[in-house]
Image 1 (cartoon, rainbow, N blue to C red):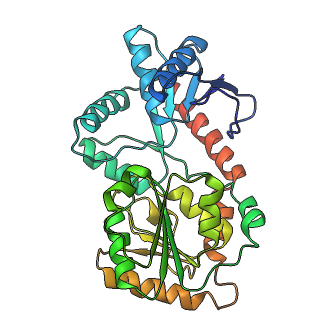
Image 2: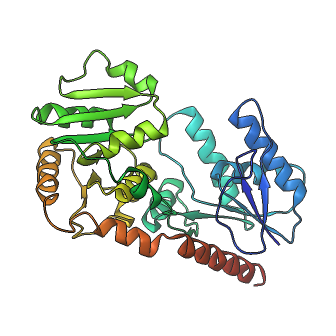
Length: 327
């Protein structure tokens, strides 16, 4: 039997294979406790013959450690491994926990980009095998909900949380005084920059998702500089594609798996040279007036990251897992 663990106390929508069972994490006062309680529930709800797939990678690692510490064998797959390369003590501990789990024959992980898997192996110094599972694209309804919003002339949007290169986006804004930048960030980041915000920047923080998407739809371009090779910004890039806004973002081992050469509505930048970002934004601004210029990225996502493709990939992963077990 296949079980899917999600880090939510309520049964929300998650794609999974037909005939599988869903396990929800119990409600708790904080996320960490909820993850641990959910992992404990999952370990106790499954047997050594089952496969437990976890939508939150750290929860999969917790499941493995709980099973190990209680002398139980569990077959675990972490969906979409997310691990950054930061020098903090917290990240070093997490890396050690992940490394130990990945070193086990009954723990596997998927990656959103094969190149990211190679990057992880360089980080770990070991050649782990990862299943490839592209991120799920289910945002087409945003085009209907926000498609009627007319973007303001000469406007650029940047927003999100993890992995954003905030220093870079402010540099880009300073280099383009003729453009208006709307930047949506966490409150903690806003406090860092509040006294140094360029006059052509509208800085917002801690807004609702609806406000976030409306501000994005009200801008002509989405600019997303990133400061990490780990998966970051994909949801914002997918939302921008669904709404029909051209994108410029950093070239990372993750973004290169989705944004391909020749896409007129999505570009990746390989340098921190501000002038290159400015040049690309102006090119995209020009492309906006061209017929069908804003469709290629969205078409690619619909073809290769659809719900059907996602479930088919999950079925393939489970089949590979069972084949591996019988060797």
